[in-house]
Figure (cartoon, rainbow, N blue to C red):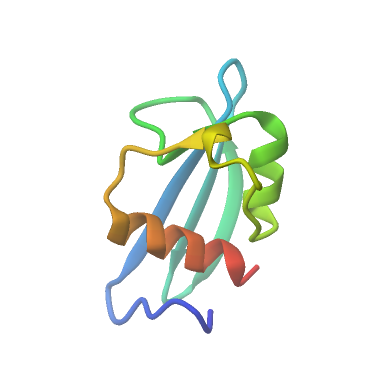
Length: 87
């Protein structure tokens, strides 16, 4: 994962949520990365509509930033976006 330095013991976990559906759970550590569906539990890392979630999974962003929101801080959001851009 060239754009993301996890370092020893480092981990990134993101919940991409579309209301009314399962979350897409993206995780990465030094051993690799995975994407899985998970029940919508706890806070979402990014909440959006379904089309924006697909764009994010492709490492892209929508032209209209009002179509998604996040409550995580800028550093965590940067790490998640770096992870998604490496897929």
